[in-house]
Length: 210
Image: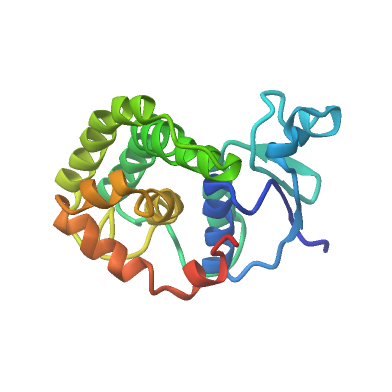
């Protein structure tokens, strides 16, 4: 039986969500880099795997899957290891709600609106587009406030680790490294405590991007 394959760059937040899930399930996976900074995601080979030219893509015994939330659910259900989805309907619904909030509201504002402008500026040796970042801050704050309000346990969806935690952790890690993220997180005590717990997990340390 061959190892599954994960396509995408290790610096991608969503690729890291998959890597975290694999690490928590103790699944050995082969990695194939797709450098989106070099445009590899728009080349024919990758478009054959993902028609929208995004990352990650996951392949397991000939079964090819894209969309991060679908991939991490599949990994949890297809492989042995600790269950990463709550067993009760309410818990699963809360986890799925967090996944939707992360994809629809957190990632677009925190990563696209704030982290990437800082990253591009640092990479090019220029100043970040402060106007664009400032425009994204209110929506990022709204997303964090909504997640703070939903938070009821030690982890996002309850008392145990779930896919919601693994989906948000890479976004949180990048976002907290920006001045805007550090400021906004100062107003979310429950999420701040959550990150203090999450950041010490071996899977977080093992998948940290260089």
